[in-house]
Structures are given as C-alpha cells and as structure tokens.
Image 1: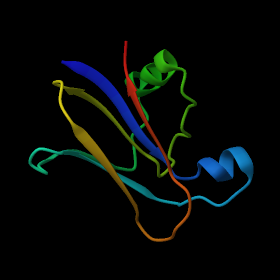
Image 2 (image 1 turned 180 degrees about the vertical axis):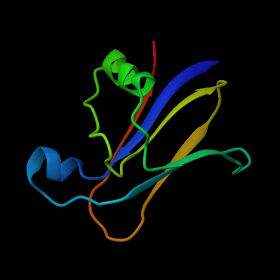
Image 3 (image 1 turned 120 degrees about the vertical axis):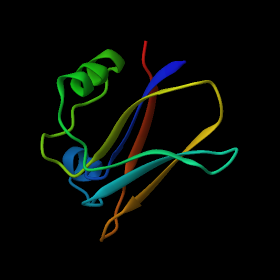
Length: 101
C-alpha cells in the first residue's frame, strides 16, 4: 500500500503570478481499469494531518477556507487517474500528486 496526496489548486496563478485561476475546484480520483469512482473531494478541509503531509513533501500550503480540492489516500499499486473540473468559471488549475514517505 502506498500513501499519496493529490490536490488541485485552482487559484495557483492568482496566488503566485497575479494571473487568473479557476475559483472552485472539484477533484475526482478514478481507477483506470474499471472507471470505478474511489474517492472525491470538493473544497478541502483544513487539518493537521493534511498540513503535515504538505510539509513532508515540500508543497506550499493551501489557505484555510479556500475552495481548493485535496485528498490524502492510501492505495495499492496500480494505475489511477485524476480528473479535475471547475464548478463555474474557467482558468488555470495546478494538479499535484505526491507519494508520501
């Protein structure tokens, strides 16, 4: 089993480069072999566990109360896909996938 962190930060360009980013992200994780929905997230919840995971992989923190999507999951080895869509609006979304040590 492997522990991983997946997140979609839609206002990344606005935060880092002053550009436009999607305002509300929705992150869905699917298994490729059967297109079976495993887990999904819309609007992450701030937690000590999530912040500790970001620190372990050197990722920037999301703002508490932001509409970004983030998942902390334990998965067996295999092929997986992440699908991101915006709930209203358009813009740039940064998707990151990390394997946690």
